[in-house]
Length: 186
Length: 77
Image (tube, rainbow over all chains, first blue to last red; front, side, top):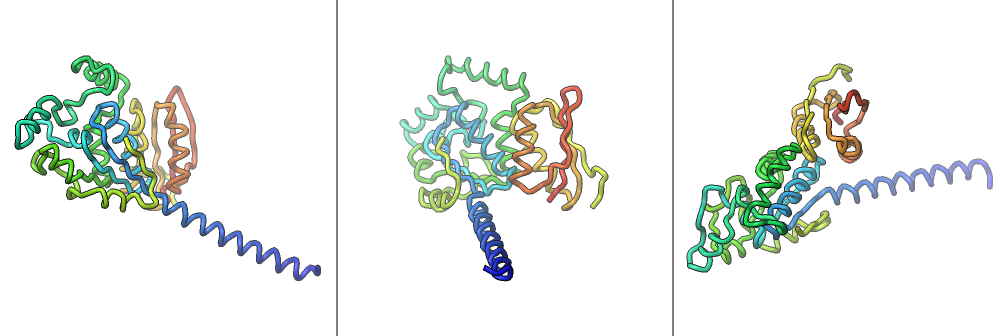
């Protein structure tokens, strides 16, 4: 092998490496999306959901939360008491009051004493509340999509839910958004 | 490229993810090349600011600690 061809080969390798690097960068850019499927309305699950969504948006990820089943209740306005059209849906809202101020813990709830203690601890440790996180998330451009089907099932109307949400949509919208995204089911 | 700090953020006392979230909110108003100074007390902010800068392309110019206060000097990409 002459020096010329060796040099040419090095240049070729460099070209290949650069191309590979660009391909890798493009690949990484594709994953700069975060989609969280928020199924749980428990305080200790919706809290990390909002923490991760806020952080994702802060990191420049295109972030979406799709709220379904119990996950819809944190989106209910705090001053809305009873939701639903029939006695079953109404009873559900009485037993499981919506709004970020009224969420229970998945364990050690103790009829509301657990969440009160958790909120006190959070205040002492300067941890932002779900409500504060929700506001920052919205400001950073996190898309909040309520699931239309579960809204109908649970008797929640658009008027029961807070402002600043995207149009209610279905599973297809959630999965279409989840293409090439980091996805979490919480 | 200026070497003067355009904006200082007092993030002392805040816990994860607020130091990063508030920095991301504040940096939107700056021009590329501007310097932003963030002061935090959360020890977790040290790895978090490093990870955030690596991920977003903003440059972590300087990182110091004095009396429990972490100071991050960041240049906007």
